[in-house]
Length: 107
Image (cartoon, rainbow, N blue to C red; front, side):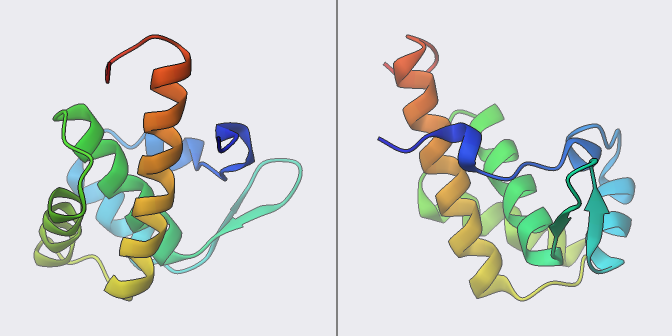
């Protein structure tokens, strides 16, 4: 199984309290955070947003991930959708596996 801790995760994006804040962060381009200097591309951030939104709604399949990416794009976020979808799938898979290991949401 994947180790979810090996998935880079933007705490700054996770703490964005509005769609507008998330769109702004994604569209700015590369974001660097943490003392380790982890960098996030717009595609990383958009993919993370889509995976989190899909998970919050209880759906982790590719259609829901793509729908959340389209929602971001419609709201003005600028990113390369195929790469963002690939990252969203990676994050969603790690989240799902972690939930199973923790005996959580997706039984």
